[in-house]
Length: 562
RNA sequence: UGGGGCGUAGCCAAGCGGUAAGGCACCGGAUUCUGGAUCCGGGAUACGUUGGUUCGAAUCCACCCGCCCCAGCCA
Image 1 (spheres, rainbow, N blue to C red):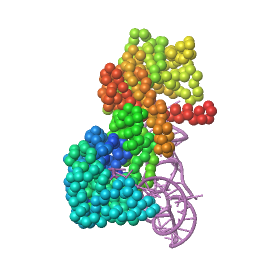
Image 2: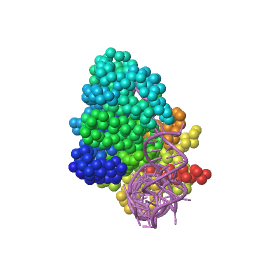
Image 3: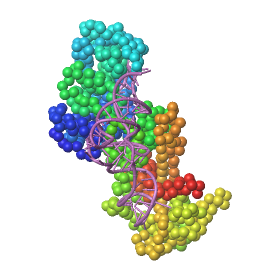
Image 4: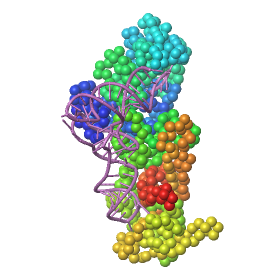
């Protein structure tokens, strides 16, 4: 079928559209997402997942999930499980097309036999060091292995015995016979099979020889009848080998490899190796630490699949090296949550406020809508009483101009409640720190009533007697530098204060919230109930702050020496 | 001194010979019981450089410059 592509365009869609228009691949579009199960998926993988599954969906094709499990020494079921969970959570479905390269080991072995018989592959006894030396350099040609011209029969015999386990690890390899003088090092008789006694997470000890990526990948694609094999740019040099393998084995309708630039995100690192270091060396609590750019980390942080997919759509697909600002990701989650998240009141850093003219024993239940832009979310009642808490940063004894929050003699609106006026403060005698702010309220200014005056500030608050304790975790970038990879050791750029844990007070309606629930804490940002949260101990993660114009003004003031 | 790829605003990114989309960020203004959201407005007269082809080039050609990748029995 020739379904027309929707959404924004990119060069890969151009290729697919063109292929379809000329009836290539019997008019099929078939992609695959081929992770190696050796680590957790991250936002960079999300880009690839969205691309591959998205392309298939747009063109009425199919996308497989295939584990590229050809190196048992690095792989583990822990990862195959987490990868499936992450892809599913992102919203994609591979239906019954869950495959493993290891499913094809027998076929791959037989294909290798064909190559040998065709004189296109040979068993080489050179050591790894020797192979490296024979390979030549970037600027100089390599030279033929002394084993390059063994007879087909000898090669067949040796390869069979490699599989049978007659030779020690590393003693021999099967190599493609291509061209040791090729300017493309990948074509200098690349290794196809190596001997490696490692227990495979799926095939156990059935095999002691394992195929290399360059050999297994094109054939796995071919076996699955993939049409467009999309990978990142570092494999561009491998494409001639990908094509060589398919050509020498006479694969009909060979899949086409297409490369795109991998994602780089500011203020974080993306390589599995580095992420693993952060986990193993205790810089973070695990692969799902909310500061990690992993899918599981973002999920725990509170990101939605919708926001991540939107992000992947917005950043586009091209071949130029890109370095996307984390602000783009943050924009996506804000935009998603703005409409759908209920807005509630939580005081992160409490400061006591006493309404002197409010009766001591009185409690009013005030109606508070959950989201003024989305009335469907309904409302709840919040208790108001004489003693409240407001945010510490919302009071300043000696305010600068343009500060329109609470300060002595000034009025502010309490969200969903009354206008109050600050009359005096109580300070700690030793530290001079303000411990209580005494105010009066104007009964005629209850939320919803018309008022005769304008107050510039509106504050969120909680009733002291009704508030519920909660732990709130504030996260900031793991790395201070835009590009931590610029330095020899990326870890020197780590932000020591990327996690701040606060003892906060939340409005009572939040008491029974379930892990995963997301809210906007009025004026403070979007938050998500952590999986470790319980009825006894509420724990919230800040997903992202709200945009903060006041912070910007302050910063500008600082810089001008104000 | 080899091979492959890429260079459009601070960051992504359209554009495919006819005279520079869009998003993020940023800056104004309006509005607002979140200094949020929303709305309106603002930016590229060297599209890496220099030449060339053309009535006309970001788009075609040539040279140059810059950045990325490749010498795993990793993927």
